[in-house]
Length: 144
Image (cartoon, rainbow, N blue to C red; front, side):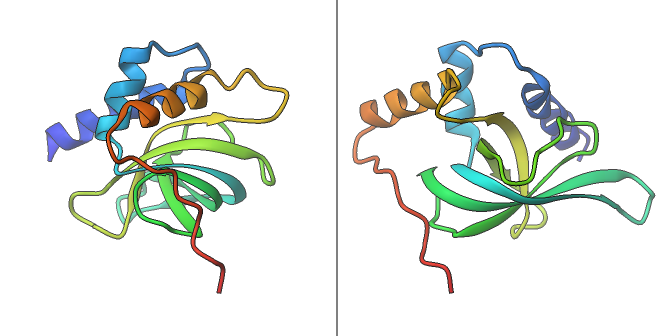
């Protein structure tokens, strides 16, 4: 359990960073992530567990899936002290399925994306996808 927490903390470090990541770091995150998507923030909420530990729950309306299952909407858990996710803004998100609660996804990395942004990381993800055999970018499932 301790090693899982350490791993989660290590991955969540990337979510704080606004610096440009190396292609090797992006490739490692790509391999580690169970889902990679771009999505618009619907809301962000701080929650507490029974021990009083706070975490953040971010609800995304998925616009495109670069890796993983085709969800139209997904909630991602993150440490409470990660960056603020602005409602209505679009983000590139790398997340890993929780080993204990299989319905929960934990944030590895997130970065704001927009037409006027450099979008370095998402460009590198597209390069990885192009080099990965049989990889396809999926559109999100139709909303019901």
